[in-house]
Length: 280
Image 1 (cartoon, rainbow, N blue to C red):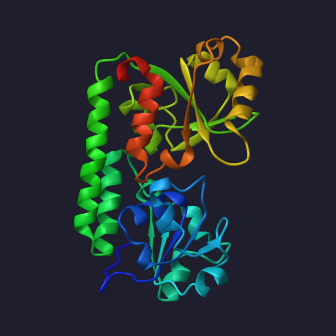
Image 2: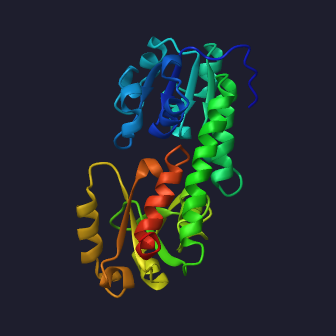
């Protein structure tokens, strides 16, 4: 889908936290008519800007609520933002004269890496006519990632299993999302990189077979990190897993494990948890 913009959007609505934070990182809050759907807390550095934008719904707004904001541009983080059943399809928006954009992580055909994040930020910068701000943000992000590489470059990679959620099966990070690239950059090996999607279900028996050294917990929603740890520690299928025996857990907020501006700080945080000695 190709869109040509005669002018920068003036009444954008963002659906999903990571795309909201991309807009705020580029100083575009005055171009926003509304926002929706946080996974966790908005990053403190963007809080003041975020508070100046109208929140349309706790999760996704209805089509009517979306239209009531009179948007000229809707920016979705996941394809679910443009749910056909809810009447919010991109076709419906186009018919209403509203442009739309879907985060590249949900459009990717190959592995998602920080190169794609840079492309996302550049594209939004171009659409809104703030290309210089986009380049400045990209330079800052590269600086953080280079710093991590210098610290953990020579360390032996740690075997990692990501636990997002699930009790009968484990919902984990596969090889096709930005989470996989983040683990690699933080000096880890994603044990389910062979899962050909961003997220997918695996059995706890498979987790036990692959024997992770560290379990990375994605923190969001109603289930606390403490609850998730308790569940994993009590799971009989995992009792012989090194990470469980040694109680080695790392934690990342979900908002830093998707294609948004928190990725570099997420990589650094994970690297510090996987390789604490490299940061002393």
